Length: 142
Image (cartoon, rainbow, N blue to C red):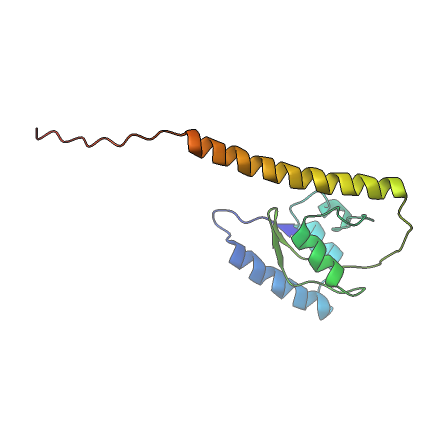
């Protein structure tokens, strides 16, 4: 379930509302699926918030860390990511053998990400080094 902060609805307010929703789900007053259909602001709303099966590394780190820490049928506290505020429920887990080719692809992706970050920082540093700022004092009293 995902809610995005906006002008009239801050991240703090959303987090409080999702925490209340979590308590209502745990108390049996609401169903996660129904609430997700009604309020979630992502593409999974129609399926009751179901993301399906996903391999490790498929989600942003904050989301994945919270998801991995949950027991089966557990519901997370509100989790903030760059996409918004999430409420996560884990229904099942499965273990599969990952093919060597898939592991190589994941390693390449991680290396590419690391190289991109380094290149980006170098580019920003180069831009700053080349930037020229001239401060002029507009003293019209002369």
